[in-house]
Length: 310
Image (cartoon, rainbow, N blue to C red; front, side, top):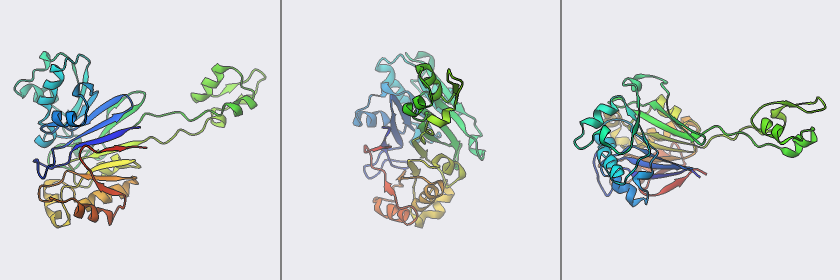
């Protein structure tokens, strides 16, 4: 089952035992890191996951609490002897930013970086979907969020899966060749030796809905976040402030817990986790209470706790 492990829940600076933004997602054989605040390499160790196992790293924006852990992470991966390519998605200018950090030279790494920058003005679009990754099991897409600098959120979901073949029903309709079973399973109609037409839709169930996880940090409530969270099994959303700091949230391009809950409710999501808590809030229970008044299935994300998309 896909598993989401939150490595850091603090906004801007470490506080109250919380660490900076980073979230680990294990989806089948794929391991994805979303954001990489300072100290992320240590948080991966605390989670019992080697940085060398990462397939994909996605950065939302260039604010330090989301990206300043990259130099240490890449250095650690290099020292661990990785040779397989690593995919890195993030804002336009990825190569220039990485080469500007002391000690990081892309040409000197023992592995190649497959850089996938999204357009610089991506956050200004209204529905600017950006395709980040696709294989036989996982699809990762990005959409623009509403923050002070260009920012994208991410959605991870199952790659399209075929429905289940009812082999007994196919046999009853005259299908006998295993190759025809495969054709039907793949969505193709076929004709039996005696001339009977068998449609795939007659013997194959509709495809199952994809499991989906949405990651929306840092952002004010916006259409991009709602699109990322549409029918998602789990949403991890910016909840930097409580209601009394609503004006500050708007000023800084963040959300209150209640606003995060409204996003989840409007998107038809199944479960909401609040994260990116301001140091003003030593306790998260009041934030959860505000959010639950709008969207009941809400909790505060707990660091190193794993959430399963069942």
